[in-house]
Length: 256
Image (tube, rainbow, N blue to C red):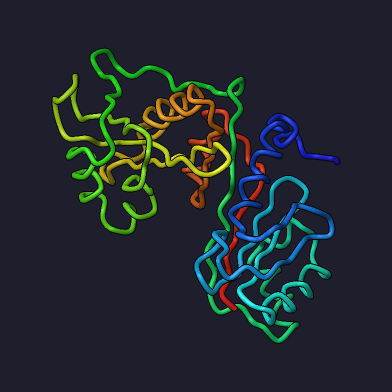
């Protein structure tokens, strides 16, 4: 297959990423060409009752909540290239032609992965500042989540991490001030580490995300896991790229 440069650099991650999302579909499905569309009411590619589309490399899989949705999506698949399936505008146009218009959309979110040899650790911060390790649910992490607001806290996923929490405090030295950035990961199927990061709203734009994420990603790699970074906003994608992540695909959910 003719992969773009980013995907070629992380080619060993492609089969692992595809195995993950095939399992999350909830029914047997593989990344093939033409794109497979399956009926999977319990799919974890999307919210319940929605359709889920995931592209990894040059192939995609699609899950539909019912037979009617699957029929409409198969019509869209015949019309669109695999990369267009995760474009909400193009997919919406194609589904409108099948009589199953899109009512709501989540995404698209890029899916990036990192092989051990590709990691670019974040540079050390000023003297006396170090990333601390704490247990999931640590009171300092809870305070950061509360201060960030419900939307940002939910988006970060830090309340679900299974790894240690990696924390950075305001000021110098452990315990010197409030936590202003945190990272960790959730262990997903197929030995994938889904990375979670949050920076306090008043401290964003100072490269704190890369500092804590670097510690979490290193921990995941040491555990033999494949780090995964899912992002919608460009600043998050930029942090991932700086650490060596390569964008291998995208995820889109639609309610028809």
